[in-house]
Image 1 (tube, rainbow over the protein chains, first blue to last red):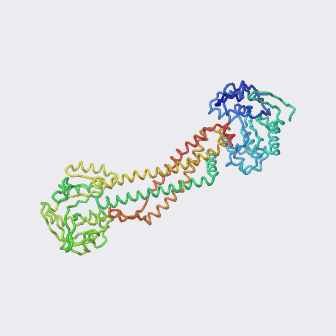
Image 2 (cartoon, rainbow over the protein chains, first blue to last red):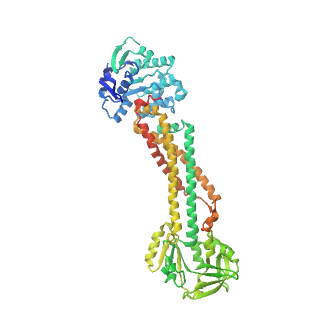
Image 3 (cartoon, rainbow over the protein chains, first blue to last red):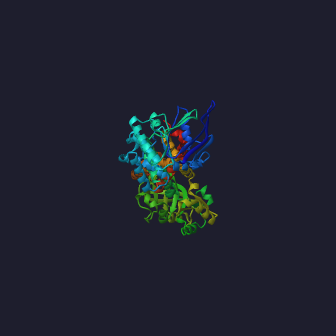
Length: 232
Length: 406
């Protein structure tokens, strides 16, 4: 299996007024293609910071993040923008769709930034929305969709650009049980059928129970790294 | 680009009330600014027309001594020839030779001090449009035994005379001798300037020259040039050609008017700048509010890989669209308003006072079409400047933090 993400002694220290805070402390992990990983841990354990570092949204104080053989830790910001656009899909807790665009336009938008042709964008956006079960809602704006539906649009958007992996920041936190299970079903299916690498930061037991790898962070360091290959 | 314009346009209408308020502010601001500018330009134009075009002309030529002592003996040497030569120049529309001096006018009961202008009626009409100002009687066309005189409405009232009345003019001839001559009122002219009406009478130059004993004497040449903006350069050229004469442009002849127009121009620019700046600050506030409300969404755009330059451009585009939208509506309405007011006229409160100063008491505002386009350009430039701070705030957002904002 090909390694998609590799972190080496990844460390992030925030300088607070009282004392420096080590949010992530020498974390060395590998993520291989097609993995479904949940990063868990109590609040302040460094889950989000870790996700930000491997997503190129924050720079490490020390250590390296290597994605597909490219070290992004020292990459210039302008290059990092392009790198994120081409390689990483994001799903946020609060969906963060563009409220003035329809579901189809929201999904197309990332491809527009990648300068895809209009025809390709349209086709791919419709395909992705069909995959997440929203073929009836192509022209609905986020305000006309439920929370679960909005999060599915966000998943379609994250996958539309064919990223190397998807980072999902507590994607089920704002969803009711039915919507959460629905979303997890879709993401599990895409993970298996399309071999998409998924990394979640979560508190949600429903997600943890589906993940085939669960990494527990405590005080910024890895305290447990468990694999559940038998999970489907 | 098309998608960015679409997003910007839809973003504007996300908070409909706020956008309508700022667009209304732009419309009202522009209407007010344009109205103020049109009124000021109308005042400027009217003052220029009333004073320069109908009274003093763009340039005047005199004997240097005449300015202090307006007497016939200080006539311009070769004045008739100079006038004839000036009329042949390309940059000069017309040059009117005059014999001008001060004197007294008397009727059976009253008298008054006046400035007597001996003119060539045809050339003078091309210079000041004097024939068009005649309210009663005719324009020096009669050739009777008693020479004709044109007097102002106000003077006619003061002396209690009418067309056909006789009056006696008393003045000095070219040798300084006092002469009395009888004239018959052929026409009464009217001008906004009461002082001019009271003080100025016109007679045929040939009549007056015959009376003073010098048929060629010219004490003043009034010059109208083809391009009024070139008055300084043409004045210099004429002065170079005739160094013995004193050549002055309208700014020298009417310094108070000149400085008043200068101040008006300056004030006009500042009024528009202040209006547009006020509108721009309103825009800045609106866009800034919108940025703060959309921090999470902008953070998401930065997170997924939209370059900061594109986010910046998107914010500038939104501001530009709002300003263009409000600007085009505001200027269209202002254009309509100015068109209507140009037809109806705008009475100036206390207009009688202006009449005393020689100006009309009703203004007819108008603006050149190019002016409206210039305002749109200035508005958009200021709007873009106003959008820089909110756009800068937007691109300073840290995506990792912004996406989690409540």
